[in-house]
Length: 227
Image (cartoon, rainbow, N blue to C red; front, top):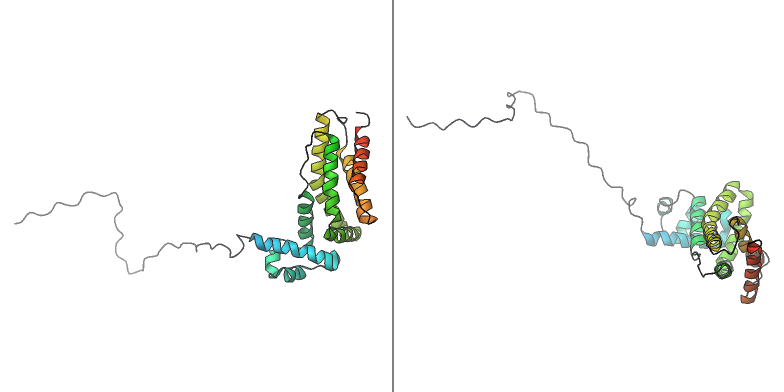
C-alpha cells in the first residue's frame, strides 16, 4: 500500500461553516464618498474676476442696486461661482473693502513718528484719489446710513484693517519715547484719516506734497503733546 501523505498541519483559522442552502451574506460596505465637484478647489483667476466685477458694479450702479446676478454676468461666470465664495453681497463687499483697506498699507518704520505719519498719509491719499474709490466710498457710506448692519460691518472691517496699522505706528513711537505711553491709537487714526477724507472725498479737493507735509506736522504735534 503506498504511503499516505501526512495530514496538514493544524491551523488557527476557524473551520469553515457547514454547507447551507442559504446564500452567503456578504458584508455591506458604505459607498465611497466622492469629492464634491468644483467645491474643493476655487480657481484664483475666477475669484479675482469676481472681485474686479464687484468694483465695476459698485461704481456703475451702487451698492443698493448691485446684485449677485449682475456681478456674475459682469465677471463672465455662473452665479454658482459667486455663491460658492460668498453667500450674499454684504459679506462679498466687506471682504473686498477689508482687502483693499489692508493692501498697500504696511506698517511703516522710518525711524521717526513724523516719517511714519507722512508715509501713511501718502498711501491713504493715493487710495482715496483713485477714481473708483471716489465713486464707491461715498456710495457705501450713504448706504450705511440706511443700513445699520452695513454700517456696523464697515466700521468693524475698517477698524480691524487700518486700526491695526495705526496701533503699530503708535507703539513704535512709544518705544522711541516720542509720544506718551497712554496715547490713544483711535485718536491717532482720527487725526490721520479725518482730514484726508474731508478734503478728498467730501470737498473733492486735493492734497499736494506741501499740504501733506503740513498735515503731517499737525498730526505729530497733536500726538506728541505732553510727551
